Length: 264
Length: 288
Image (cartoon, rainbow over all chains, first blue to last red; front, side, top):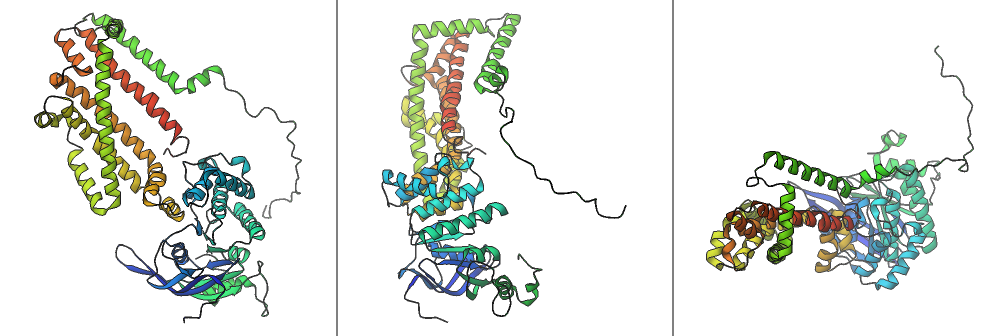
């Protein structure tokens, strides 16, 4: 169902099919997924594990080439990783352990040829302050907690001032209290700079909290099931249904809507 | 006794930091001294020297086993006469030449191995073939190829260093986390700066292990080569010093020569490699 791409789309994913090879099989991760991300969107890819949402994000990152369809950013086809799409990973080891917090950010800015070292330090300190880690600017990553590491990764990605931020379950490995705080901080940062973010998660509450637009995906192979708007809270719609239960119904069918299948 | 536990009211505590006692208490002098690795090792060395001295005196056979004090005296004369420093300098310069050449070739081989699959197969096969082969076994062949001179010694040194360093570096490259690789690609690094800025620091723990093992292999090989074929060049090194003094039955001098070899091993391990370690992988929290 190739729709005409909306002209105002920043990122446009058109009928993208992604496959990867395991030892014995060729696995289709996503099948003809299409969506558009507009400027300043907080676009969430939501789905159970195995729906190919992370693979899809990696395709947007330029790490995987689609076998069918195309991904375009500002009208340009994406085929390699690049600094205009800054990635925040789930893993804590995404910071270079041999560089301290400030230099991790400087590294991103200088390696990409965006800034010279001296200007990079100022920009880095600015974003470190934004995520509240000024005191830890010269600490090495292994001395930081998980939440702090993710803050640094977010600061690093934001410092690049990319066209779009790609976040692959950045808070999934955090404890529940820290996760909530980080979601809040991310929204506060968004309110300040109105960056565009493509956010992958498997948690319905997180999707509702973070997203202004949510793409629901089904698994095996990953297909787009629905695309819904979201106001940031679990509102009741005209039928008297909570947004979260609507999402759950859509993802898992009626039987799971009662809430006996929170995580799959 | 079937009902729920009895009701307890909520409690709210006032938290204050004013009346806290000392939380961090300084350690006692001995505990601090004992925490110092250099101190513990020095004590061990002194202890070993004392055992040596006592045993040698009990044995009372200077030809078989001279005392520690006699060895130190021989070391002193050797140093004063300039013979021992000259031998040590000669050995060291040869060693460094061979080590550096070995590292350079290892770097090339590893670069090839990490760039292509065929290169990786080549490295794995060559390492499997040559790593178990003692370098010293190649010396007779090297003497035919390169003649009696530094060339043949450097050849066996390269062989001693190359495989250990290449193998460790390559396995370090391979075990680098996929996330870090993606981070490197994300910021648009070129192939060369990707190697310099991501692969090498990321694999540094393995590279350092390779450097250490390579150094030890090279050192051993060199002393052995000098002992056996010390005449191969005009001025002898430490191995030759040991060999010559043994021929003249100057056993304390033999021990002094060996002690110098040991001293270099200790210095390189404890001063050079330890401080590289402290500045890099320890500081980065990359030690396993």
